[in-house]
Image (cartoon, rainbow, N blue to C red; front, side, top):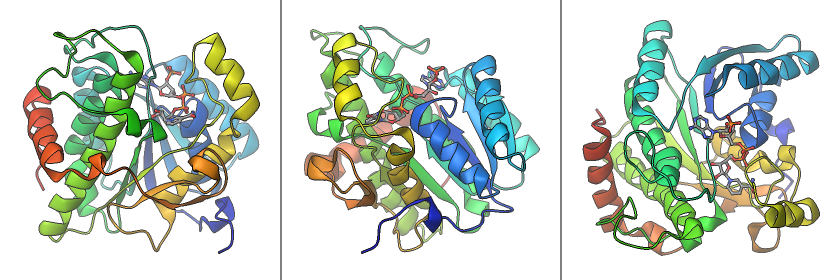
Length: 298
Ligand SMILES: NC(=O)c1ccc[n+]([C@@H]2O[C@H](COP(=O)([O-])OP(=O)(O)OC[C@H]3O[C@@H](n4cnc5c(N)ncnc54)[C@H](OP(=O)(O)O)[C@@H]3O)[C@@H](O)[C@H]2O)c1
């Protein structure tokens, strides 16, 4: 099979795309690739200045690009609601939602809404955002949602009775793994619900392997990345394939094709057995609706 690259992305004129966390790393590269192909790309970012810088950089390379910056703090449910309300007012279509923003292994902390910070940012915020944009996605033909997960989902083992790590010693990598397996439970459960409602929205997931970005903060891991990580444009390819590939089916997962899926051109990959536990996925869905206060209208 030939290598999947940005050459596989057809003209995107007339399509509207939201990418969370698109001022940096994989989100930025995905925004650039889709803007180059004439999609209208909304850079959904928490910092206006960083968003403006990203927009200027993309425009410098592709002056025809149709881009805007909108403020979204995915770790704050009020900000998520404000973003979604504004977007639903201003737009009549949403072709592609890429849930990409993320944080990795910070010291223990909670979001303003009381979630452990990685689960709150990487899963709960995107769950609430997708739910509040779902009507628009449903009414847009051939729309897609892409959730960006990680190889680190293999470290995830959610404790549904203590999602905020209040009764256990915090293990930052475990909590990151939990948030990334949560991305997959969300993908697979949403996929099941969409299928049983016979709707046409597609939901897929992707992971970028090991990609140089601003995600890693520690000196050791930055050193490791400098040697082993692939470039941002390569790391964005699985996300782009999950977003665009015509043969993709709802619930598909994409990642790099190289050894241990660390690097390389993208292909369809498979997440671990635990991520396919329907019972945990259904429970997490119910808890996510309860704790975010947002219900999907599927
Ligand atoms: N790089 C890898 O090797 C790797 C591997 C597996 C999975 N991933 C996943 O890939 C995704 C993108 O990460 P990346 O590697 O591109 O890292 P990155 O360069 O750090 O980009 C992360 C983006 O998320 C944004 N973000 C973080 N918290 C946010 C919040 N509360 N509200 C809105 N935006 C927020 C960041 O904004 P600021 O600039 O304002 O912080 C940044 O734009 C993440 O979901 C990550 O888990 C990455």
